[in-house]
Image 1 (cartoon, one colour):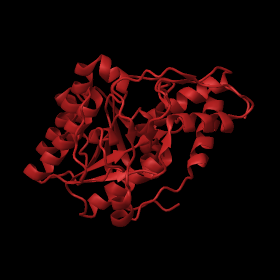
Image 2: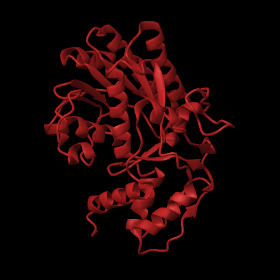
Image 3: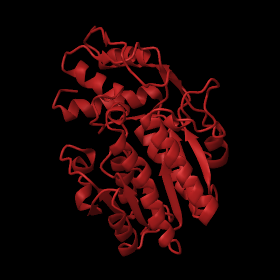
Length: 329
C-alpha cells in the first residue's frame, strides 16, 4: 500500500492513545509512516496499545491532559503538526459518581490542549477534537444533526457539550484549524471497559454467564465499529489539512440505530452456542432514552461512509475477544 502523502513523516500527537479509538488510530498512523507521539496517563498492560506493540513504534509522553505543562511540552518539543485530542473520561456511570474528575479530564483537558495549540499555532495544521453524540443531550427531534443545540444535562453529557463549545471558541476567537467529531458508541476489539454493553455482553456470553442490561433495554443507540471510526477521523483530518472544515462539527454514524435489547439479542445469536437470557435491571439513571445521528454532512462534504456492515463489525469484535480470553474460534 502506498502511504498517503498527508501522513508520511507527519508529526502527530494523539491524546488518549491507549484507549479504544486511540490505539486503533495510533496503529493506523504508525502503519502510514506518521511520526506519532502518544500522551499516556496510565499504563494498561492488557490494552490494545500494548498488544499491538505500539509502545515500541511511537514516542510516548507520560502525563495527563489535566497537566498543561506536560501537554505544551509534548506539542512544542516534538514539533507537532496535527493533534487528535481523544483523551477523556468516557463512562457515564463514573461521571455520575465522580463529576469532578470527569470535568477535569474532559473540560480542563480540552482547554489545556487547545491553549497549548494556540501558543504553538504557527506550526499546527489540524486539530481534531472528540466530542460525542452525548453533547446534544436529550432531544425530541432525532436524528441529531450538526445544528441541533448542545444541551447536555448530566455530568458526562455536560462535559462533552462544554468541550465541544470550547473547541469551537478557539476557532472563532483565534482561527485555529479545529474540527469536532460527534460519534455514536464505538465498539470493537480492545475495549476493556466491560460495563459497556458490547464488550460486557460478549465477555459474559463467552464465559457462559447471563449478560446484564442496566436499563429496561428500550433505549436506542448508534453503535459505530472502531475501524470505521478511525477512517472517519482520518478523513476529517485530511479535510482540515486541505483547508476545509475549520470550526465545523461532523457527525459520524452507521445510521442504523438499535435498542439495547436488540443488540444484546443479536450478540447472543452471533456468539452462538447459548440461549442465555439477559438480566434486565431497569436501573440506568441519567441515561438519555434515544440517541442517534445523521451523518449526511460527512457523507456529502467528506465523501465518507462506513465500510464495515454492522454484523461484520460485531463478528470481528467477538473474534478479538475470543483470542483475548484464550478461547477457541
